[in-house]
Length: 242
Image (cartoon, one colour):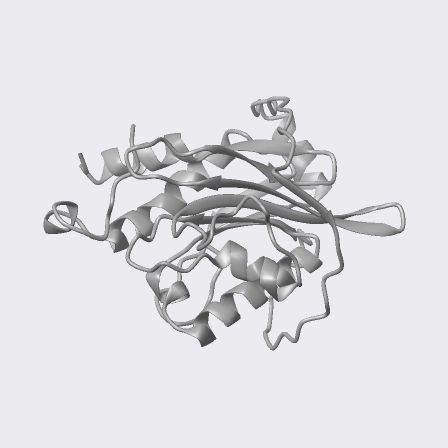
């Protein structure tokens, strides 16, 4: 099924992009719940406002909980091999300023390993909000978190993946000039010996075309398939969007 334009008529006469952005994280969490190993859990986090928030976060849980879950008849994780990245570069990520408080449950000692960001118009609105967003993503990557950006916003032309690369002094030669406004990309920054490499799996999103499958990296060697098409279509069915 094709990607719809949720920001222009005729669709805006019957539904809003807020409905899609509100429902999609829950559908993604349900999808990931069937794929994640027993020691991982995904949860939605939606914030309406100027502050940048993680939409879907994947955490590594306490091993005791994972063993208890596995003995209760949980579904085994499907083995999946990620495709070759569309961009692979040796690079460094600077130490970005962060002013925030994170509170964790010490009983599980869960560790953030992946974040899926559904980009909203406000993220692309002004230079300061774009800078805030890409700095947040760079900080997550520097912490070893796999970051997935999904941008279906057709009303703003900025490409935050391109701006993220510019922030760290890199570029993706496959991007057009200007870069496309809608895209989906999975990014990770991980060590290889003494060096660090940035790998990305970038796809341009086009109206009336299906969405891609992206790798969601849980460890340096373990990825699960993030099927954006199936979760998007389920979201549209839930909301009765034709």
